[in-house]
Image 1 (cartoon, rainbow, N blue to C red):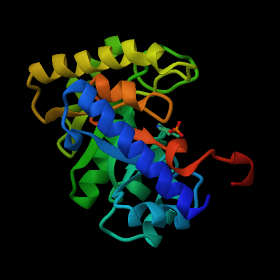
Image 2 (cartoon, rainbow, N blue to C red; image 1 turned 60 degrees about the horizontal axis):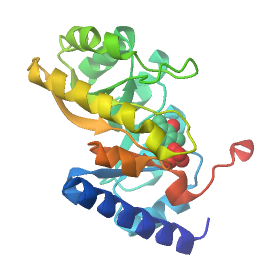
Image 3 (cartoon, helix red, strand yellow; image 1 turned 90 degrees about the vertical axis):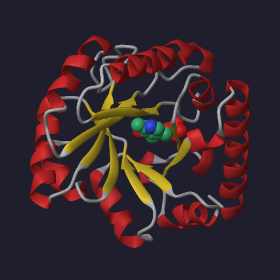
Length: 235
Ligand SMILES: *Cc1c(COP(=O)(O)O)cnc(C)c1O
């Protein structure tokens, strides 16, 4: 995609984020835009960096590590896709935040690798709000027990929750899921569990990030709206 198009897309997304913040009575600084660069070339990412974007989301470990090597150190990489336990070691010291933890088994493997490197790994719990069979993530009812278990892992820090809402024709249809995830976040925060902060709510993609912001998202993950449609056949 041309640099000019990426720049104008970013301006548009920024305007919309601002407008959604205003509607919700929130400050723009409360929302982090994660530019989802999966399948897109480093040259596209460099255009976004030039426009002031500092946080990028990738859903594959190998792609994240390859891009990590080629780009400046002061940008943040977030792993937003499903993570296999055997790949944790490659990203443990490269991903600033792993959005997709949905089992104790995965969290304990993260613990192992984090301990080896003597670091604390920041994670979110992925919640499958609409109980879609095609999606990863834990169901709402299983979130609290899972968090209680993971909170005992000293090198894993739970920062909040993440969801991928259904693919819908109207963003409004996802409002109920965003609202419920926010409520769940608040409920867990009130439990004051050691080693758990719950300040991050990662929800909203190109089709529904404005509604997600209205419902309290602190991170939105926007790919297509910035970099254009993805072409999976060529990668
Ligand atoms: C690809 C992806 C996104 C971005 O999707 P768009 O609809 O292109 O904005 C967001 N979150 C996750 C987890 C993704 O895999």
